[in-house]
Image (cartoon, rainbow over all chains, first blue to last red; front, side, top):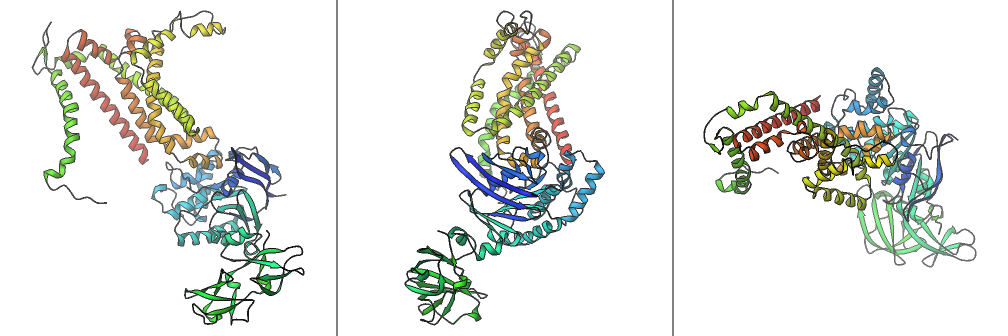
Length: 345
Length: 284
């Protein structure tokens, strides 16, 4: 198969298991974001793909070829580091030309390719500047250009945008995605920013505790989270405990939710409902009743905090789509069965 | 933060102590030495205040010129050998686990506690015919018979490199520990083998540190006067040996002072030249 395949990849540092039995296949040309809290093993996994760390178990295949034992410099990949790792003693152009120089390309070839790449990253004519004279965003682009200089098979980025301010980060996310689509290069980005992952990725890989919890398209991860960790980590959500009777009909806080059926054999389950899917209505009209405790009016959206059955449920809606409620008021909560995702235990 | 310029004498207060120390321990002795270098020597006695250039004139001979040249060449060779040996060593040291690093550094520091005399005699034993390292080579069948390796230029060089190496490592160590490890990793992902990355990323990135270390070891080696005497022949003696000889055994303080001043001037000139070349290289 063309693309990258990880087979039961495991990495142990002494007695600590950073990555355990990771199974993943990345088809050629896809953009994958590995997402997770710090210490979840995502960076270790990326470093193993790059060959900077050796797996203690499993194998890594690139276009059908086992590269587990191939040293980094023979893997034909480009990598952007969190620190960017631009060489301080070289100019912008020399930094980008570094991999070309190592491969013994002629000066004309180097210059041609550097000019091409500078145009690609929208920094034409910057070749002679010292790296220290660039802004954060410009350095970022130079690091990307340098990693792409040899047209690698695999483009790896480790928290590439974390050093930029929020506005620039958003712009670079779009730019990076457009660049990847233009070049059609298989790309893997490690990030802890879910917005970044949602913006750029074809496939989001959510990791925790050295395991892949779910790997799917961004919208599927959001709409159909596999477990409580994914549901809670991606966006905000309401996690509600439910119980089922013998027919599978679900009950929340003692009230039946019409139409919500748990899979056969499940007695108890946690369901996830996104705040924007929670609708408020008059008391008695919804599945459950509650008391409004706080209203956060952000202008564009309104968050309503409702206490029901001792739990806090958050509903988000636009001002016009929401009944006028204030703190202390009794409300009914509508839980439509199609927006309730039953999570794995 | 911008500070106001000092207004009164009291504002300069914090400078008094360091300035005083510098005056007492550096300016006065160095001034005395410069003054003495122009004094008139009394045959069989000490010296009388005067202002003569005869001490400097005497120095401008082929013999002393040769000794000065040899001293500089020896110091430069020691500096280069030390840096060439210490750079890869310290780089590998900085990659070791923290605990092992501490053990190595303590071992290096313990070498510093050895006196120059002990180092000299230890090496002269190791280089001797009867008890030296060539006996091991004979045992291994690599040599026919044991030979004396000392006195020789190689023996002087080895002893001085041995003495200066711990300093070199200790000066390079902080810079290498602080060096961003992803620079080398980036070079590897860009197709450079670890060995190539060492030469075309690490060495140029540490250019200024390497330059400063070379100068430090050079000056350190220039002052050495015991090891050349213990491990070398008279033609391997440095200017420092001759200065000691003139000052202590010939009781010719003015001439010794003149030689010392000359050595300081030449050293400063060389260091300035190195820095100038370094700065030019940086601009290019």
